[in-house]
Amino acid sequence: MNKRETTLPTLLEDLARFYDPKVWHFLTVNGVDLGGGAIELQWIFSKYGAKDEVVIYYALSDYDTPVPSVVSLIPSAFLGEREIVDMFGLQVEGAARGLYLDDDSLPHPLRSNA
Image (cartoon, rainbow, N blue to C red; front, top):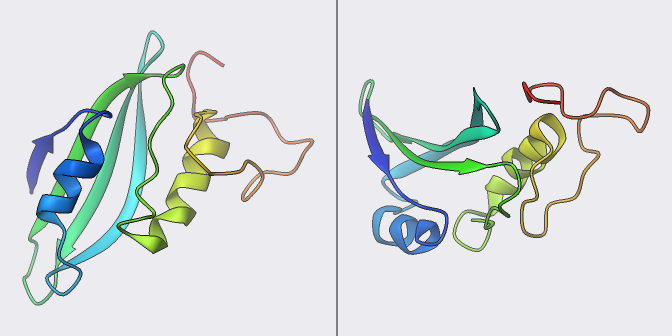
């Protein structure tokens, strides 16, 4: 596994330099609540034809900072983006709430400071 740090302002630029859909399979975008209002966001890729070659781009943020969407580069990312909206209560550009949770569900259940 190879972890590469990025920032939300440079995320799209960093991923555009890295991502070749013929070489890399986009797995998901993930969040890890770090406590104290902090979150680590992860964009996870696996190399086609390579055993156990995984690259994770990650950015540290807080819950109030809007997250840029990567759907313009990786169309399938819309599912993961909507999931982190539901599960963590993040604001992701263009991603609506309500994919995984019903209106009466506990809001953002993976957020420790909920």
